[in-house]
Length: 275
Image 1 (cartoon, helix red, strand yellow):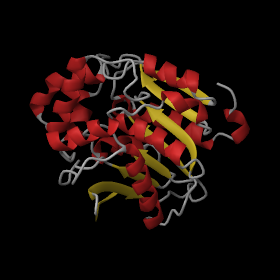
Image 2 (tube, rainbow, N blue to C red):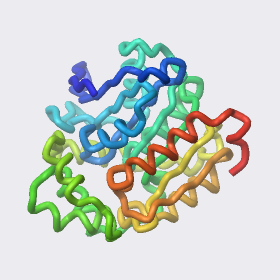
Image 3 (cartoon, rainbow, N blue to C red):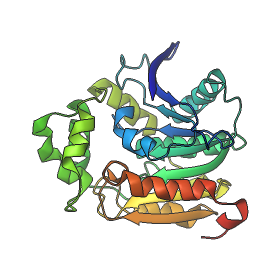
Image 4 (cartoon, rainbow, N blue to C red):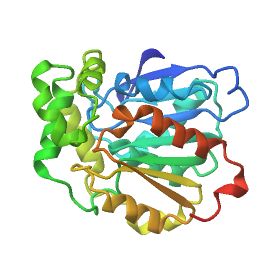
């Protein structure tokens, strides 16, 4: 991916872009919203396993850049994303949207706010916002530490409480990609949490018209799997898939996750009805 920083009155955003592969010219581009303190380098294994569609990965304000200039809300980031789509030559869509963890909340907001721009929606390791089934506080703190100290060898003690304890978690691969990741800081993460503060999609999940794929980890201590079941129960056209991992299954099982995503994105419209 080509990584660049986009600056404006809001501050700076770090984005990664990739052109469509030989078989992806006729497919909608894939827009990816990243998670709390996470940088786009961590999603490179997933992007590599999805070689066809054009991609744009958007890091949260302050990840790998200077902290945001002022507090922001999800509706403002969704609006800014539409401007980035236009600047990238994507026009007003349609695009497919994938949101990871915190970015999954932003993806829900984008789908509601711009229904004509969003064709299909993928929600990974995420929840309906503040009205969620809470995870373990220690796991959340370890996730923050990993974002503040990406790739550090000492961070191995924080991996299991976040990524789960399956024997093939892939600690080495996670750390290798973490070494190249853009760092976050407390101010930037506070901005992300303020954007989430008071936000919930529960009252309007039934209005999400896009076919939605919900991916979750069976052993996720940050966003317990009950949240995925809740999303699937309330979104009218949805599919639910679980992985035997924790919060980071898009890293540890990138190939399997990409296969699920690609099957969903290439399925005929009629095949997506029902659950």
